[in-house]
Amino acid sequence: MTPYDDIAPAAQGTPTTAPLIDSFGRTVTYLRLSVTDRCDLRCVYCMAEHMTFLPKAEVLSLEELDRIATAFVGLGTRKLRLTGGEPLVRKGMMDLIRSLSRHLASGALDELTLTTNGTRLAEFAPQLASAGIRRVNVSLDTLKPELFRTLTRGGQVAKVLDGIAAAKAAGLAVKINAVALKHDNAAELPELIRWAHGQGHDLTLIETMPMGEVEADRTDQYLSLADVRAELESFWTLTDLPFSTGGPARYVRVEETGGRLGLITPLSHNFCEACNRVRLTCTGTLHTCLGQEDATDLRAVLRAGATDAELAAVIRGGVSVKPKGHDFEIARRQPAVARHMSTTGG
Ligand code: SAM
Ligand code: SF4
Image 1: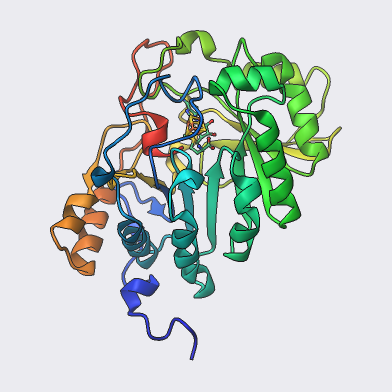
Image 2 (image 1 turned 120 degrees about the horizontal axis):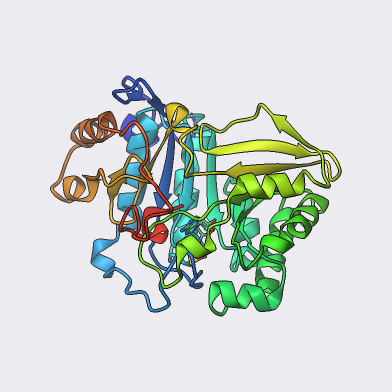
């Protein structure tokens, strides 16, 4: 008898039905779950300086988040990433993580992971590790305290560095995510990569995506990773790696540092054919493409008292209309989608 034997199949997330397949034949096995729209930072490319956050009643409760995540696991989701907003500012977050980790223990889920800004990692890293989390993504665009404060509108880089060190000490693999910004960190990127690789962390660079209204002019912030790659190749040897996560990242090895570098170019279309992921906002809206407005309201279904079977059927319907590809175009001054990244979950 295991601790899970007395939990009903739906609550265990045991796959009982056919996998989630969209109308283009892509199997969805990866859910990114935003647990809050709130954050302790205000990154210039992500949020407006004075954000209005959602009323609590609109945000899914921990029980609702667990129920939806579990429904996805029951439909064949193998990887679950918790994100936000900042997931570690959500009250009760560790309870949710410990609860969801039952799907790791049962073998229904391959990976439970987290994207965080790292400010509270020093506090939570040991608990995350003991709950079964093996890897975390930490967003860090610069090592310079002044620039970090400017980009995050008030954050302290030392806290994030302490958090990363605590994660490493707790045995968590850390991947650094850095948004490439033309005027802010472009010149620092080689140093950031060298630092991350020197610490044993992979690093992934991300192009800015036009999501939600922020004060900054995105056409001015946008830095093409094709240009960054060309610059890096003027002094480093980059070897393409076959590694893929089914997402927009392409990976190379930097021979001089021995580390892995990811390049996320969301504005190119070269990844949509293999896209295996969907996103759920903290209000329970299912988005099957980061760059499209298609949406299925799972919160309404839950709060209307749906059974597990009814919930699964609505999820299946939502996934079936997953668009073929996104519609980002940086040259447009208007955001491609009105919602902020912090609502959808990056
Ligand atoms: N707060 C957590 C963090 O910062 O890691 C998780 C949520 S955050 C929205 C997830 C990722 O989205 C971060 O790596 C962040 O840099 C990235 N991001 C936010 N807005 C973006 C934008 N407009 N374009 C590209 N990446 C963005
Ligand atoms: Fe917060 Fe992450 Fe958005 Fe920065 S990128 S404002 S840390 S949610």
